[in-house]
Image (cartoon, rainbow, N blue to C red; front, side, top):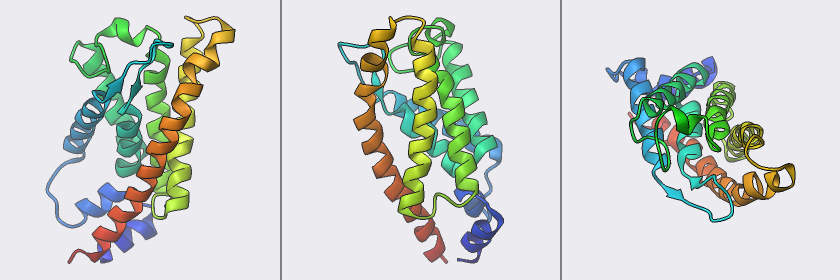
Length: 196
């Protein structure tokens, strides 16, 4: 409990509290593992017939990486994920390679950087400790991803199709993912506080 309380008091994130318990894993290993976790979440993909952007679990992985690792390590995990996908590893939902980053989903993928940083920054301020603030953390990160996605998608769609194809289909999914996540983050802290 003392480690969780120390991380809470120092503005640390969940990863700092776990490491404080003597876990011998470097930050680099955590960043690599988080990038692979994002890639795994991105494979949960549902193509939508009316938009070139699929509904994926990637945003969930990105926001968790930020919330659990903090802004800098979360940002590094997303950058590594994007780099691995750009190099051809099958990490993106439905494709890989640099061309995929420059296509209709490229803005959303770039928005992953902003989403992870925002989630991490808010977690560093203790927003991952209770349901209400965790929900706000997730929604803020999702909003950043969606905003960047719309900017990128605007190069491919006429303005009258932009919101119906690039925003509206994702609002319910993001709200559901955010609610589920907001319940899990505080549970992790409670679990850590009870561990001897």
